[in-house]
Length: 235
Ligand code: TYD
Image 1 (tube, rainbow, N blue to C red):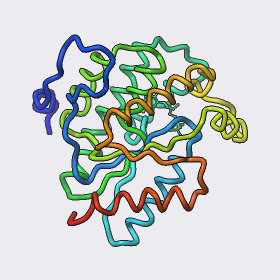
Image 2 (image 1 turned 60 degrees about the horizontal axis):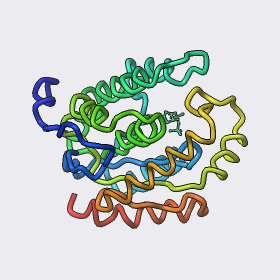
Image 3 (image 1 turned 90 degrees about the horizontal axis):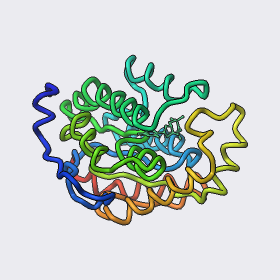
């Protein structure tokens, strides 16, 4: 869909306080799902397991990871995650949004139009959690950017892999690479992001399944697959 048309799809209410329950989000596309959670919550592993399981059922699945997934979005990802780049919170918000706009236009919207299932490792909820709750940016502005970047392309349902912040620190330290710019933001930041995710999921119960990410990998996978079944029924 051309950008101008997408901008017109959604009206964003003005002047609202931070309240993700304000209901201004699109309804969600029936075959579009996202995994959300703080860094180290196991999203990427679960996304791969889920894609494999759905493909084994004969379904066509496209997976994406945010930020990234197109040449422009990948270049923005490098900028965003490089610890050598100090980035102002507003610039950070715009860069994540720009990466998303390109991914929606080039990959997600076309895949959905072809009837494929799209599984996203993060989508707009990450921006509300990280830039809204984490950085303290205004939710109204963030939603305006959703309208510009995503139009009516939004996940039908999201799975929040919920992990205590203490466990996250352990998982990140266990990794064999140094922390990226976002991961270096400090424990307080991740506490706010984590609390933000929980608040968002509570305010949108119809859009979220919260899963205890401390459970064994197989159990997390089964929980996701079980809740996805009815959502995909008939699709
Ligand atoms: P990535 O290595 O993909 O982390 P993860 O495997 O945990 O998804 O890095 C993406 C980082 O960007 C991660 O710290 C979350 C952050 N992020 C935001 O702050 N806002 C956003 O809108 C998105 C999509 C990601």
